[in-house]
Length: 243
Image 1 (cartoon, one colour):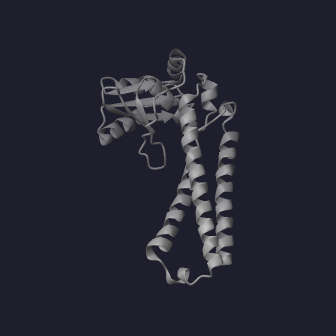
Image 2: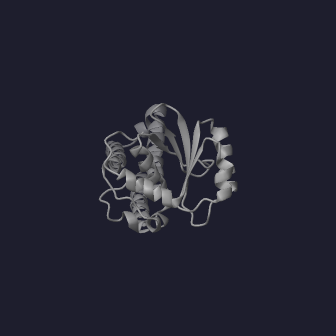
Image 3: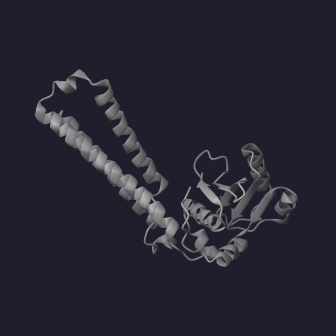
């Protein structure tokens, strides 16, 4: 049992170290945001914290619900040690999830300057999605970030003030967007059953792509237009809650 406790402490320390290393590595890859005072906790770190939470709940399920016989037969000192480990584990989870909430809240409240095309190119794809999400929030949309593996090309799900939903695809590209990407986005629009689709990219959009989207419930925003929109909004702190 002592080996189990030592192993648990080692596992907890390893997971926390992974969270710190992941955050540091992502920050180093994103020079445009190094000067910001706070940032949202990365999806990788949230996944690690979620895994730690799942392991804790599974342990409670075994010990409290199943009530194994071996636990009641342990010496009192080991039982007290396990209770201490559980309390420490719970306190760690509370601190970590509190950090996730606080950083998400700070990211919503803090202002940041509109970025140039070159600065947008230097963003990590996930940061580009969050940047675009901020623009939609400034336009009073409710925004949910969906960008992940298997997202079917939907990076953001946005809801207009009137209640209509739309999807947003973010493309941090340098090469010109052609009609193939627009056709795929239209297919995703039909599959999702939403009212509108936005394509937001750092690249140029070809005339053929714009012609194909003509008359369809789609809005194509190229890099130059994206910079103009950000500058016109003069991104300011938000007071509304993030969905």
